[in-house]
Image 1: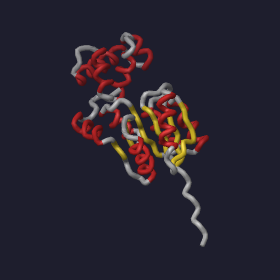
Image 2 (image 1 turned 90 degrees about the vertical axis):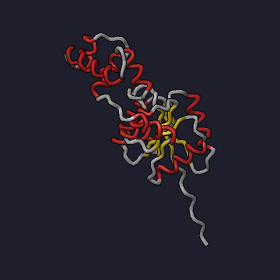
Image 3 (image 1 turned 45 degrees about the horizontal axis):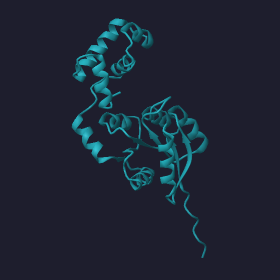
Image 4 (image 1 turned 180 degrees about the vertical axis):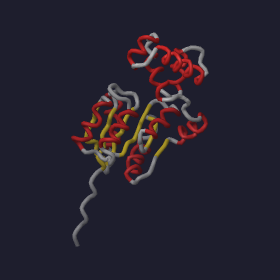
Length: 209
């Protein structure tokens, strides 16, 4: 009687700008018999190229990375290689991040302090077509409600985060100063802030930026 061939391990791409965290995740996942880490990158804008080269089944993406955020990288990967499943892992359990990650096409969203077994299980589950979300974050996202900011308001708030004046923001975003002023005013009102700096802080804390 001929033995059945062993199933191919799940191929995983890791993207995290913190090398110690990335290597720890690689080590933990490498302990699983059915999972193989085939590539590691430290920047969000390296994800698609690495995925093209190494053909992973699943990409594990941190949110805070240079080049592109994990959410932006997820959207880029979804457009370039839609067969690759995406798991977002983050230190920042912010409800707004969860909503944006799901909108970008992510299949799972977990916090980094989740048990290693939970991460490995999520890798397997997304390959089966399931969506995996940290239950605490899911509850918080429902309680928080939808992100009230429009895409343009987020752009302007991001541009204002470094202290740029309206004229500089207008030049950068190809808008008029009056339009920038209006967007900032609306964003301040929606966040319940007293000024633009506080609006940026609140939006970041909630994961809207």
